[in-house]
Image 1 (tube, helix red, strand yellow):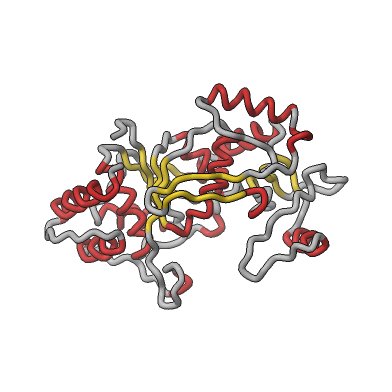
Image 2: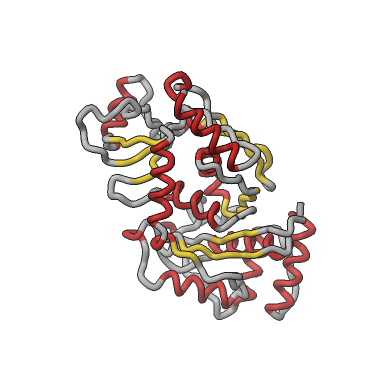
Amino acid sequence: MPATYVGRFAPSPTGPLHAGSLVAALASWLDARAHGGRWLVRIEDVDLPRCVPGADRLILQQLAACGLVPDESPLYQSQRSVLYQQALDALVTRGLAYPCACTRRDIELELERLGRPKTRHGELVYPGTCRGGLHGQAARAWRLRTDLTTDSASNQAQAQEKLWSIAINSIAQRSRSQRIDWYDRRLGTQTQDVAAELGDFVLQRADGLFAYQLAVVVDDGAQGITHIVRGADLADNTARQILLQRALGLPTPAYLHTPLVLGPNGEKLSKQNGAQALNTHEPLAALNAAAAVLGLQVTATVLEDWLAAATTQWAALWQR
């Protein structure tokens, strides 16, 4: 059992917690406690236009009512733009990121020209239009090159040295597969070819805001996160984040993606399909519902005892 375990719950303050978000919060808290580690809360408010004033305070109150109290003061992404800019600058310097002038429509038209039109529910795979330069157009966003090899090194110093070598030889390394193989503690072995399935993804958006992928990776590295426990809807982000971790010379945490609570339409529970704010007037009822999704059955009737019993059950399932 690692003595340096650091986990986190990272909600976006777009509204109060609901039954689905409590599942992720509880799972991440239990995993940290089962490993004798620290549990942090990060408010992911990098996308400020979507944030609801006061939602961060409400989320923290809801967590506290359920006995889920972080071991440090929460970190706010909206206060960390300098760090994200430094990370982007480092990638640009090494030839791993570049400016992009394309609109969404530009990308759709280019994919149609290439005979690769987007399917109804498929990804809009960026075709690398601006890798070779902007050709007089104004930059709208910044993207990570996914066609360059950024294999992880045994330590950060080795990773930095490898990245400089990549930058020097980047022209010769174009169009290589970037298949990322990773292991999920619940889902098992996962794989994704980021270059083929997603293309060069955005690090800084056209509106100037830093993208979720960059902010998450920078913050996980800065906070020393060793284990990420979150909802299965975020599993598809993992390969991109691992690729970005390698590009920045950061370690890759262990991952566990939890089952989702589904709405009446069979999709992930959200405000869009009727999710109600979590009722913390009866915290044990809310916790029991979340525990059932996680395969736990806890009978204690006192909050402190409930959390202790749930931690013991979780450890029996996942402390490995």
